Image (cartoon, rainbow over the protein chains, first blue to last red):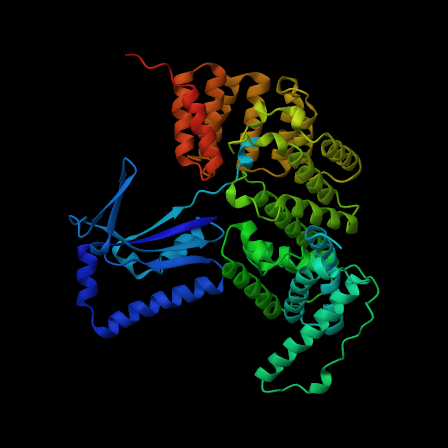
Length: 125
Length: 410
């Protein structure tokens, strides 16, 4: 089963991050590095990325065949997606175990979503 | 001159024997497996244009022995040459006498110290003779992920102390059960809707059937091995009718049965009939028997639901599980009417494994539809569509809901 671990950011979590000492910040990054390493070593990691600040986002819309773009920053949303892990593992319990190691989990900002697959065996029942 | 496809087929057949020969001669499953993988790659490039050598297995053994020696040397160098170079045996150009290694390899690749995803990847490479890139495409994950799973799996095998030989008789049946589970997983992995990305994928259902056939040759008396092979054949036989040209899946009730593969059905039916008569009964055999009853009905209306119900009851008594319960409830509804099915479904939902499961909503929708309660059926189809984890299933459930939508009133 594939799962997406979503990591959000909000003003409170940003304030916490900004208030940390260099050593504390290094420790947080160290925890990310360890998680990345373990997920890669176990063959469960598919991809993981951190996203640039939402002020760098570009919105895209197509009207009458014409592509139009609007550059950020946009009116601040309270929470935004800051990064994600796409993993494949044996079940939701294991996925939750990995998600719990994301430092932001301490602030309730981590979510696990199952990914849809292409299996259609269920229809033959 | 052979086509690339013929070469691929030949390489997959030869792979486990070559690997077995190497491991028996040199030990060290890990390095030998890497060496064989490289020899297979070389053959896949050279043979289609340069021609297949007179003794292809001998060629593969020689090339992978040489490669193994190089790998071994590199490793030894890394270990500061702790080991005496004298231990390097010169590669023996004579192919080893044919000893069957497929079973030993399967059991090693499905070793209990490995996670199931690793067992799948390692089995496909070491026994199936597939290359890492092919496995990655087939499993829809990046190549690096598969490579990592395989190297991690081999590392685990090494540290667990597992060896390349048949496990003691006392462990044998449990270990074979794990192999069957992996083979069925590979089959299911392949039993997906066709899509653009499927075009250049190794056909995993075919690969699972091929490996299960090989296992059956080694264990002809094992009823569950035969049962699993029959189940795969009887399921795969319906494949031509399962997908519409636009990729949408067609449920069993609506399939054009003239498209089913009659020859494969005949093989599966014969196999399961003989097995049920001679072997101790098991869950794969019962699932195969249920598939056989479906396959033998010329039209959906001709399905012998009483027999299917009896088989599900037996299956539920020896191997209970949430999906078995739902299958039985569908059969109950077909035999005793949708209301009887709906009552049993309400009771079954008390099981936490079923509560809120999308299949419960899908089965309820189907039974409500049969009972004529279209509005409730529509709501349940929608709920099931929202909660499923499968794209084709979602598409199917949404279209069922849409078909039940009454003409809009102005």
